[in-house]
Image (cartoon, rainbow, N blue to C red; front, top):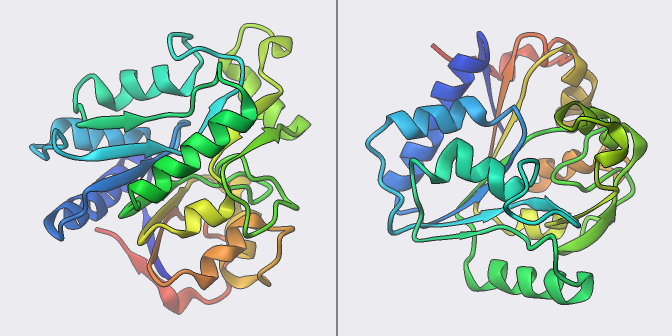
Length: 242
């Protein structure tokens, strides 16, 4: 696991861009993408670059159940606004939040199997979740319907006018789905993520800390700022990004 420490989220965007650019250089064709505030600076760098994704495929981690892709809080809408409108891909897959759960989860896992992901970007929840895979999710889980925890609902409520508008369910790649990716880039910023970062990197591999499974992956880069990495004890493994 390679750990890069950056000054701030803008520097993290540049570091993340470098990972994407290197992947493209090495022939990456399929990119697993994430939503939320964490990857925005990376997407901003991609939009400002001359990288061309018009012959590439993107596969998003998750989508709220019950929201159409035209809804301003859907993840399809988010991706259009923050990346796809400026950097279109040949194909961009996002779960269909309006589809039947059993049908959609099987369909989406089939997309992942048919298009093996070369580089997967992840954020990190304060409780260690990746995608919408909350603590207790089996490590071998595939794309599935998720009941969102109260902490996740509260964290997402700031994007909605009223908390009761936040969807209670989502479709998400499973942990097993994520681990199929050839390379993984996880990004985390801020003191609120420090406990999860330390547990992910230095703690035991346990389903109580979903991101800890990344210790078992052969090719992981973690981008953190100083606050997110404050509780790491093995400082020698941290590489400053300049």
